[in-house]
Length: 589
Picture (cartoon, rainbow, N blue to C red):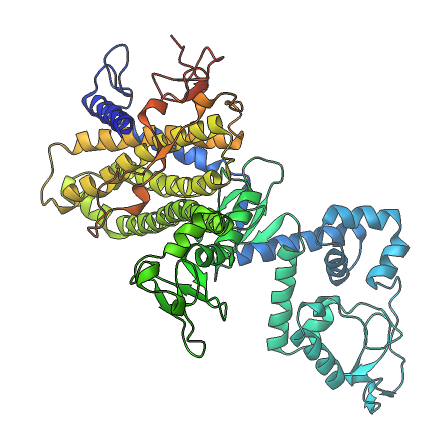
């Protein structure tokens, strides 16, 4: 379409202005100096970005950290309540490792708490007899071989070991172990486990105890990545739910799915369910097959004439168009490639409902496929970018440092660019799930969303191509390149611009596109044209699938001039009522 070409031409001219430092470019300033002159201030910007990333509302806990925190909590409760550490551990387990809740309940009603958790106020001693009868095996054993919990019920060492081992092998329920006597509810603490169980059972018990500290505590969770042993402590009510574990996996604290900001958890849940459900399979069957008139088995026809023979044992022969018996067809009905009966019946409306259902299923399937392919393609591109980043950090950056005669600290701008690419791919991926569930009737919001998404994706493709293709030239060079500083300035500038695009996109989606009200006129509706490739080819020689996007036509680039104006400095789309840009505070002329 001409309008789309106009929009792409405008993008190209913006690219030329950006790279040439012209007056219309994103990098120009009043005094003629480039605003994105990162060559002189690269270390400052990197430090600022690093500082920004460190301002997180969670902490990553290793196994040693978990054990240390657990011991600290036990010691705190033991000291404040003047009880044994094993008793403090029993209390904390029963109150989900909440120190404050233990203190509140204990000081409110100590007697009730002791009764609930099985802590006796006074420890009972084993009877002072030379021989005692074990309450499980009923054998007479020397007193020195008998053990008992705080209740004083004696059992022999063999029975205790069997009782403890069976409980531990049954699972985490062993943490709430009570006296073997059926009439007794006295708790069996960790001190007895350590003194009576064998090494293997002690290790299992300790592992269950550490896991309970994370799983029973509402402030902590395990990282959901397969094989990861890190846990996360989160500060509730402090902004974003996104968490980046030390294992490099990012997830949402609220729903434990993959990190999906700016899309909400409910949308992500619906999207994942839709991807795994059978609904789209049924839509495909409905859109691309017809049931055999005799056995009702669905049949797909992808070529050939209208004469269909069902598979054995049915073997019914029928016409694909009207589904009538083939014995009633022939030259008089249109031959093998047409059906007069179908055409006449269709004109009379006999097939209207069936055709309507099939068309609706086909349209629904095509729409879902459009969004899913782009969602999956950005996921694939993100995984590849992660691999490229890892390769760069492990090997290529050192080689580049030697070739260009620059310290690795001066090459941080490359790592920053790739980190930005990885993050932007993740955001872009989830915007397609957001777009799928964006109501079709809200034309103004859909226009605004597609505009922001298109601008962000266009900027990302320029950055990705620069970091992937142009960097390769310097990686393959055998001597210092004269224009490497120009490349530094260009890549750092593209990183900054792309970050700004995606911040605008994320901000808009997190506010529900509230800057745009519901459409009230037909003039706000737009037709989405086919996607275009913006980023060229990847290293494998194939076109990068993730560089396609649902773009609006060129006439919609301004996103309905009656509601929106685009900032000349940062291109953020602002509501008409705003006098200054909401992103960069640039005054609207």
